[in-house]
Picture 1 (cartoon, helix red, strand yellow):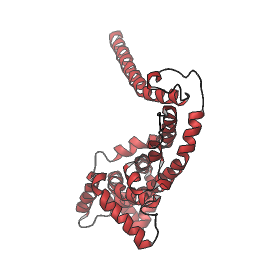
Picture 2 (cartoon, rainbow, N blue to C red; picture 1 turned 180 degrees about the vertical axis):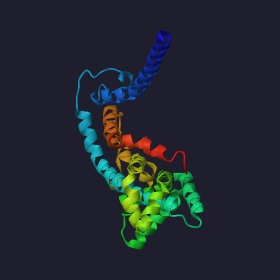
Picture 3 (cartoon, helix red, strand yellow; picture 1 turned 45 degrees about the vertical axis):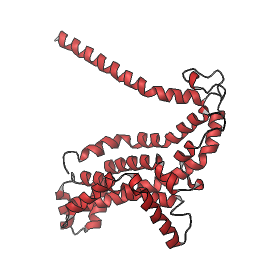
Picture 4 (cartoon, rainbow, N blue to C red; picture 1 turned 90 degrees about the vertical axis):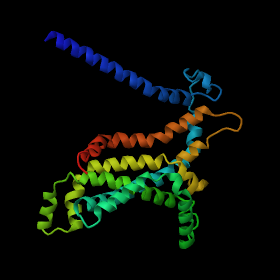
Length: 285
């Protein structure tokens, strides 16, 4: 018994050591980011990346905020409504495809899934043409092509397949008896959805919100092609923080941290639901 307990302690110690090593490796880039962001430009050099600042300063943070603030606000206008719209549409699609079967439902679901494998580059030209056409059709120049609404539309449409898949697999785990009971009580499709299905959808909603918010916030390719300078999100503004003669590493590091804070907050607030929602439909579908 003592030998078994000793082996368990050794195994636990080794596992803890491996985990600590992985954490240290993961934190190395964060250390370089933080240390460099507090350095003056004269010290922000790749050769001194590991050194602590000789002079601690917030100047890089001030400049980074001034340059990045419009982009951060544009990213909020992009990521928040885009995530919510994707969640609503994905939830409705998943509900219908899992609980209200109709002829051709499986074929339609398969066609939805094909949308997950279309690369951004493959739809860029027709997408630009579509948004330009919407500008001309509505007379709203700079709104669909060149503005945030067009970028939101592109991401919502592009996110429908994965959002539908997540919700559909989650709703399959809801007992059919609950749906049948609501029908017996006289509830229709929408009443059943709002009173029975939606209240138990928190894990799936958290997964979709995290997934879509991260995708929209970190988008660069669509943002470069579909928006103008006044509508650039944080990723494009971050790419444009560069000096004419020398690279302002401290400003770039500070801006990178500022741009990553919202996604980190989303994971902190909703992370406990993430794995639960992903695994809910893992054995069914």
